[in-house]
Amino acid sequence: MMILITLFCGILFGVGLALSQMTNPAVVLGFLDIFGNWNPSLIFVMGSAIVVGVISYAIKNGRQAPWLAKNWSVPTHTHIDAKLVIGSALFGIGWGLSGYCPGPGLTALVNNPQEGFYFIGAVIIGSGIFYIQNKRLAKA
Image 1 (cartoon, rainbow, N blue to C red):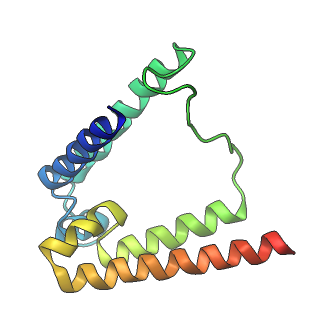
Image 2 (image 1 turned 90 degrees about the vertical axis):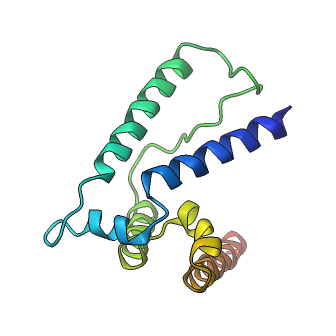
């Protein structure tokens, strides 16, 4: 059952990305270009995400446990540290340079295979570097 729910959520997410044009790097870059030829259309996507998040947390706060799991799985880290700031900056720089973030980047493997290959390759390499770095830090 959980696999079907996960599949449904993934398909819903993908359809949302496609309908909102988040899979089109030109639209994303147009949204990020606030001092140039700005395209504000993604404000509605972000606003919708905020509304869904607020409603979801209201539901979560009113329940002891989720419907399909034993416990809630939400972030517990609440303070801003250097790792968060550096990670956020790297994510933003990558998003601003390429117009892709990981979800829409996967769709680029089909929509624009050459860019998608380079983007997903960079994500895999970056993840590998992070993994190796964390293993070294854990040993120290």
